[in-house]
Length: 102
Image (cartoon, rainbow, N blue to C red; front, side):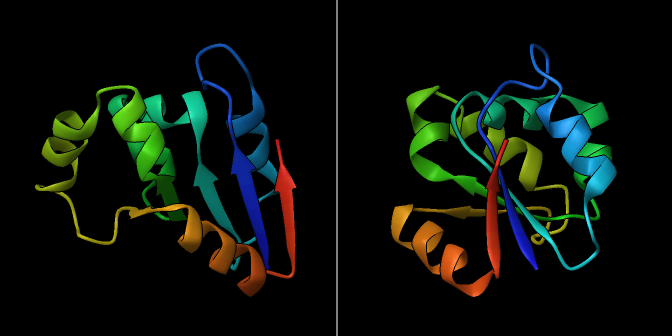
């Protein structure tokens, strides 16, 4: 079980798309930094719908995306993604056998 930590924008880097090619069904993805912006794009919402997905709350706030993310999450299942803080990030790092930063 791997936690894939994606930090770069999906529109300027291929880290997220490459990660999805190697993702095992038991793996999880953590979006941080500019990677949180992909949640605003329908094509990424669809590709990430079946992934155990975590998003860092501080990075959502830092980019002023809280209201837009709330609008995206409401019509979707509550399980679309989990918004977490840094202590939850540490917990997830310990729960997974390995963390790969892309």
